[in-house]
Image 1: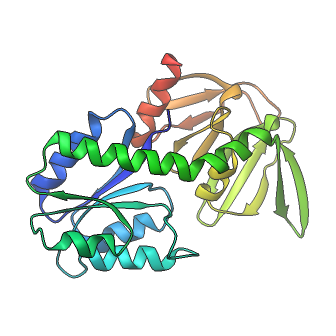
Image 2: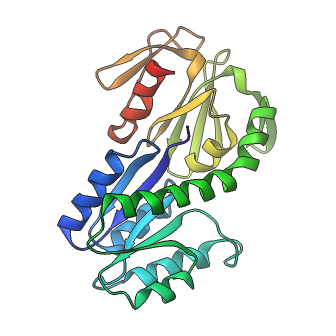
Length: 251
């Protein structure tokens, strides 16, 4: 089951903690970040690691409606529903109608019960699955990537990718038969979207690992199998990715 990556944005610490607890107890949700101001949240959202935002309306400096408009305007087609989706959370009922004008998919009036939260989250989950379905289907049918590197296009078989490392606007792709990685101008979110979820997993903000090359994991790190790259290489596990790693045991 796809875990929806959620951000909470609210200037009230108690409201943030409540929503974090709701996300933790909902199996199809995963917390990607919690913020007490919209400006800090915007920087993280721009990285493309968020599917759904629980967004307070009234906040200082930049309010929720203004943030949602910025997100919508950054989409290629602002009229279409695209990720990240937004569920507004507020104590002021008059914002409900205005919220839907900025592509919000839900509206929660404080104080928020878990039942109300879950209903809104399930609705968003269905929409996200529908938005991701075409891309997921295309991923599973493709067994290679074409990557631009050093003024040429390189074909890389997915089965050969051991792990991928993110470096700001670039990524390094390490394959089993090459000692040195392929460097290309691409973000982690972009390459993650191109990879089949049954074969690869993002385990850290800066690392994606080929599941076939995991030898063992534990104590905050993954040990990789021996390849041309080296023997016993370790990859760190990010705090927000630990639950996803643990799900491998149950699968």
